[in-house]
Amino acid sequence: MRSLLLILLLGSFMSCSQSPKRLSDQLDIQGHRGARGLLPENTVPAFLKALDYNVTTLELDLAVTADGQLVVSHEPWMNHSICVDSVGAAISEEAERSFNIYQMTYDEVAGFDCGSLGNPRFPEQEAMNVSKPLLLDLFDAVDDKLGDSSINYNIEIKSNPQGDNLFHPTPQQFSDLVYSIINGRVDWKYITIQSFDFRVLQYFNEKYPDVQLAALIENQETPAQNIATLGFTPDIYSSWYKDLTADDVRYLHDQNVLVVPWTVNELEDMQMLVGWGVDGIITDYPDRAVNLVK
Image (cartoon, rainbow, N blue to C red):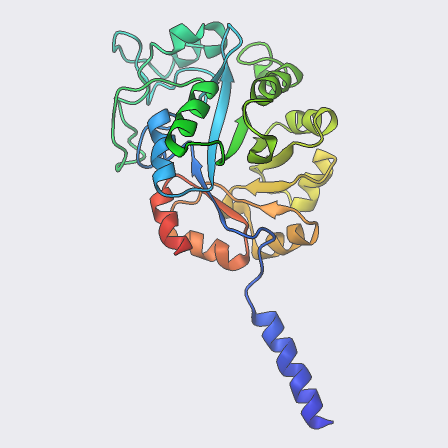
């Protein structure tokens, strides 16, 4: 009896001390805005560079032009810190929102150089003269490099109530536009739609229930509270990594929700999160995450 008790206690200890298991079969390495730490963000060269490091997913943001085209851009305006106008003139921080992508045609957007300034936050980033691409042009460039459409895309719809009909369409119109442009061009099994705007996720969940959805989170609420606010259980929970705990990962996995935190750039933090059992990492430095996988 004493020997049996010892075996049971030892087995319990070993079970508790094992690393948590991911829900996904493979750690999902996502190149944030392509490879922002290495090349200008949300540009074709940055996404192609990310592919050189064997990322599993390309993470990107969308804005909408006046002529109804989807542009890969984090802001719905020309960010003064990374863009200059068509003649190379600087854009002031006070004036940047007047360069409203939603009020420009794509031909006008393409005239801005959003790479030559570099980015002071990313000293390793190589500066180059490059413009914001159309989503369809990005798909084409990736297909040309890979020879197929087998890479995953994590596509953020950037919207908020204050920006409706000013910097972007309503969530419903924005979502329908995104769906219509992707549908038939890339298989939906390779697409995740993510957003901080729960209105977008709620609309997609109701109208396009087969599309994989990721809830972007930047608050101090618990996963249970955020999911309750959302009103349904998303496929993926993507919070700022510093707002995530090992207990959160376990809770979300118990709900059958994948956990993919953002934006993780230091190898030590990546290793900690992988030890917690996260299903993926969103990073500006896919070259560092390669070492993590190895």
